[in-house]
Image (cartoon, rainbow, N blue to C red; front, side):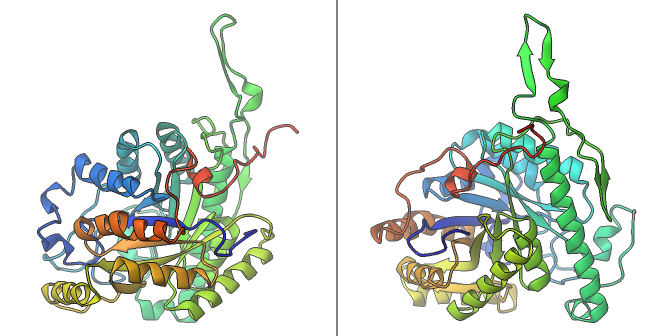
Length: 403
C-alpha cells in the first residue's frame, strides 16, 4: 500500500456473529437470542455500527453448524447453533443503511464462483456500491458431505500441521485464489455502458460489451459472461482472514483487505512485513492492500469490570475463552491506546469482534469512536458513498473494455 503510516486514515470494522463472539454471549440479558433469526435484529446491529461511522461490518457464515471442535460437529446444546445466510442477510439490511459497507462471508471450497459473483454484484447494486466479500476455505469432511462432489479425510488442527496437511491446505487456498480470480473477471464481463436501454431504438443492451472470460485453470473452467451487470464499484472489496504464510499469499494475490491476528506490536510488524513481501512477489507492490488487525473486545467502565465480565462468561461456558485473536478487556480509552500502538506497526485498520454484541457494540460506537475522534484519529463524518471510497480505493478500470 502506498502509505501505512499513522498519518493515513484509520479504518474500523466490526465482525458480526450470532449474539457475540463469546460462546456464552447469548445468555446475557442484552443478547436478544429469541430475535437472532429476524431481519430486525440484524438491521439494528448494522445501523448501530453505522451510527459509529464504521467503514464496514462483516457477517460470519459457514457450511456446517458451529462447533467447539475444529474438524467435526459437537454435541453441545448450550451454545448457539445455526445461522442465517450471510449474503442474504447483508442484502436484507442494505436498504435500511446508507453509508456502511456490507461484507458477507462466502466459502469458496464448495460454492461456484459464478453464483458468488452474481450474488455479490447484486448486493453491490442494491446497496449502492457498499458490497464486499470475505472469502474462506474449509477442509472439514462433514461439510464436504453436504455437497457430495468430493470427500475429505478427517481433520484436526494437529493433522493440518503435518506435511500432508499443509499440502492439502495449500491446495484449498490455491483453489480460493482461482475462485476469486473468476469472480473478479465475471464482475468485469459487462462493460460499464453495456446497457443502452433505448426505448426508441428498441436496443436494451450492446452485446459487443459483454465478454467471455474463458477462464481455464486447475480448479475451474468458466466461460462467462455473468448474468448481472458490472457492480457500481466495478470490483466490490475482497477480504480474507489469514493466520500464516499460506493464507498470507491468498491475501497478497487477491485481496483488498487482509485480517490478521497479532498478539502485540512486534508480532504485527512481522506479519505486515511478511504480507508486504508476498505482495511484491505476487506483482502487486503498487496496488493498495489494507491489513486489519482483529481484536476480540470486552469494553466496560474499568478494566476490572471488563475482566470480571469475561470471567463470568467463561464460567457460564465452562472454559476460558481463547480464540485465534487477541482478547482485550478494558476501557474504550485503553483500547484506543492499543489501536494506536498497533497502528504504529503498520496496520491500516482494525476489525473488532464484540464479545457480547448487545453490550460491546454500543461501547465501540458510543465510547471508542468518540475517544478516537478526540485524538483526531478517526473520521467525524462519512466522506464517501461507496465502500471502496471509504477505504481509499479507486474504482478500477474494466479489464475487457477497449482502451
